[in-house]
Image (tube, rainbow, N blue to C red; front, side):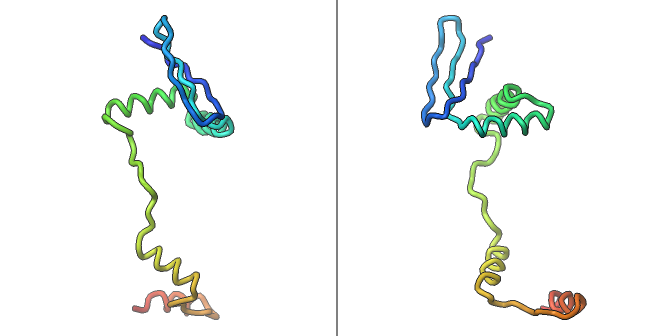
Length: 109
């Protein structure tokens, strides 16, 4: 079984080296402050970082790719429209003196 050793580096590049004994050394371009946050997160889940990385690598192999969706988060159109309306004070109702009046306004078509 080969061993993967990861060294965290604040530089912007990474490098993989394989030694004669089959040990893989990977210089991982990642901010050390993020690693501390990851350590804290994984610890709260009962894992250490090396176990979390091993879980990710195994899931990637099983899924024949990244085991989660890589995409920009999208905002549903209705929510986007509501945010736009509130920013530009369009289609607003109120102010209301009583909560009952506000609820009644929301229920109107």
